Length: 337
Image (cartoon, rainbow, N blue to C red):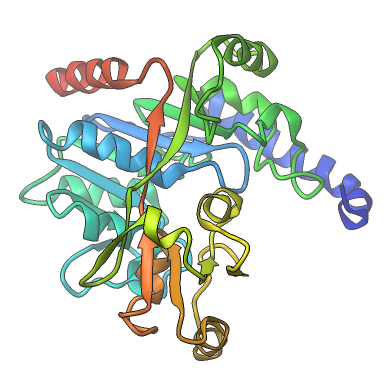
């Protein structure tokens, strides 16, 4: 732990106290939470990022969208707009945020909306002529003003919430006791060969009563551009530049990088400037530029399309998945709505 975080320890206690009191006021009903007559699944975490919310939301979209009208509601982090926006053909990564724009491009059969006020966002979605059957709340575990019907708490295998501390001493947004609000917990970014014994040890370490599931990151066999695709097995051996503006890019780099490659790291959700693009192109020097899917929606159009490609990922469950639990919740809630 770095020196700055150590000297901020007293502030961590103050932050803990504030979040504890706020959650207590919601738990006791002193602060009002709003419920809605529609299945709502909230996906979030206790830490500040890097747990794999985007692939988990995409998993739920694939699971539910063939049977239900699905909407995804996000706050649209770092967007240039304000208020409620329903994504349409005029949407950009800048106007609605990179992750919502990725959902919009990737899943044309769903509704994607952004609103920092989730209550207002849900109300607007339910007033649409073609209102959704189920709403997925992206990164809304701490948004207590809305009472979701089902909460999925994510924690990364190499950064479990039980090993962390509250901000600014650590990376937790709230005390780890917030885990009790979850209906299920998913440990993300696990090794592919994580054994049943190792999984059980993690369950015991987390000290939770809920079901705990384990996922791994599955990379696509291809990298994609605007009008091209190449086998990963071919691109891995080439000399290239890897660019990432995500919270934890190590897995991405480890999967693609060889000794001839160079890497460029930018902050999570970074808005790429003209100077950034010049830096990337200078580093590439004519070579291919491979980035993450989330970064691609921000870099697309800023770099030559013949050079820029991205690597898609999926969240894959180890041993057992959540399909039955989620389908039962949505089906029961839909029948009661």
